[in-house]
Image 1 (cartoon, rainbow, N blue to C red):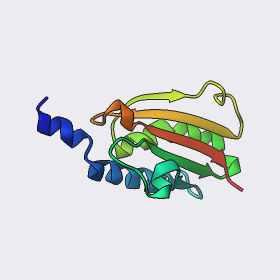
Image 2 (image 1 turned 90 degrees about the vertical axis):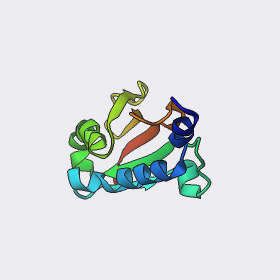
Image 3 (image 1 turned 180 degrees about the vertical axis):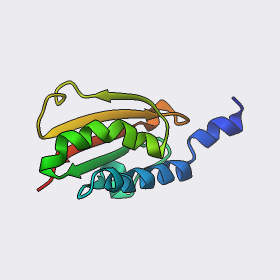
Image 4 (image 1 turned 135 degrees about the vertical axis):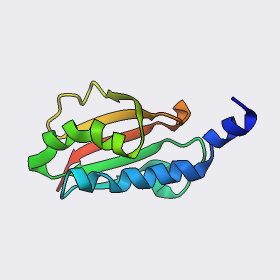
Length: 119
């Protein structure tokens, strides 16, 4: 990989576009849900090394269906290289914590996707 290609991996513009896609995609697969930025993205302090931290709030009655659809949903925005569920929340009926790595982004740029029941 050339130095230009390596530097391009950390370009904040593709990361911002990915974050926007991830914020808008959930509504199409899980009506009534919403995604919101968290962490440095929400504070406006994200840089080229920042993860994309999002919370996805889904309707109570659709939680399991929405969580089951998450891998395919995420794949509509960007190819998913790996997806891991936090084992502490894997069996929770109200919350999941997903760690997602995308093809073409450095490992420091993973997504953290939290799914929670809606109010």
